[in-house]
Image (cartoon, rainbow, N blue to C red; front, side, top):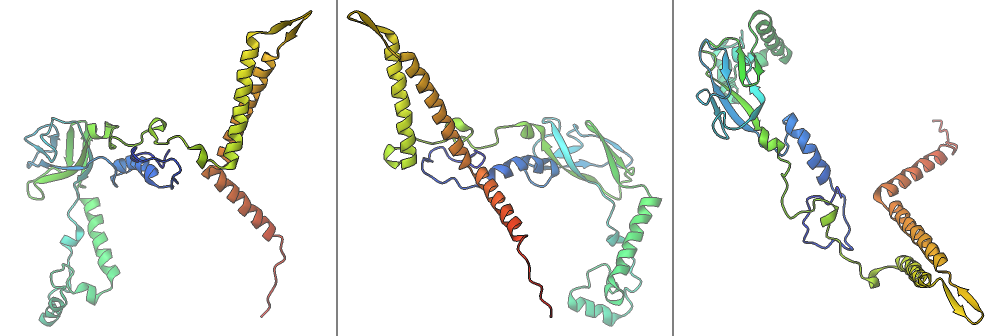
Amino acid sequence: MLNLYGSATGSNLTGQKVSPSMGGLIELAEEYGTEAGSGGNVTYYTGSIAITAGQQIYDLSDPNVVSLESGTAGTDAIEIKRVYHDAPPALARFFDPFIGTGIGTQQMLDAFGFGSYSPGVSFMMMPVFADLLRLQAIEINDMVRRSAYSFQMSKDRMRVFPIPNGDAFTKIHFDYIKKADRSNALKGNTGTISDFSNVPYQNIEYCNINSVGRDWIRRYTLALAKETLGWVRSKYSSLPIPNAEITLNGADLISGAQTDKEGLITELKEILDSMSRQAQLERKQAEADSLLSQFSKIPMKIYIG
């Protein structure tokens, strides 16, 4: 069933091989991908908050402050998934002591297409780890000695840090989803297989059944005939004959037929379960373990070079 979910109901699956697929498992995993922000079946939208100098708290339901891709703020219940509010990258404030050391060197960098990069000559004059150490020094200095770029959300309010001064940034962008989209359970297409009731299996023609199946049908038909005969005989428990009565065995036929039917159904279930993909893989695993156990007892040759 997990492999058939979402398939078209118009095709006849009788006699068709159902190949395993990852579709059902991936569809289940998409729900987790939505929450993790790595995909999923819920649309991610973008929005922004207009920042005002000196104002630290913003109302996310105010349409004059918040701009949403999907509509007007305050009309739909949303959930913010990611806020793009980070400090300027350290590379933008990278101090290169070697920049401008020579016109010829700078011209060479321009010829190689490196002239527009901030580090300039440093990655040619010094090892890469020196650049990384200076980048880390800038970031640690901002984290320890300056106010960190962060935010705090409580229901429909967002508090941003540090207090905006109007120079660093004018907007804060974010990703969000509509809560109604996540709560909607009907995300699939209509007219597809949804459960066991609409799987398009049709009756199998008797001529296409093999000898094993025909033998089971014959035995089950015999049990039905015995049961029918038993009900007929149980209607008249005894028949009068001259100077005596004949007692019919209707109850015995019914009991024996029902026992035969239950045994045949149990036998059919066991056969189908033993032929399932899970049972076959378990048998292959047991076979592989048995082979490994036998191989482990075989003496190995020792080669001396």
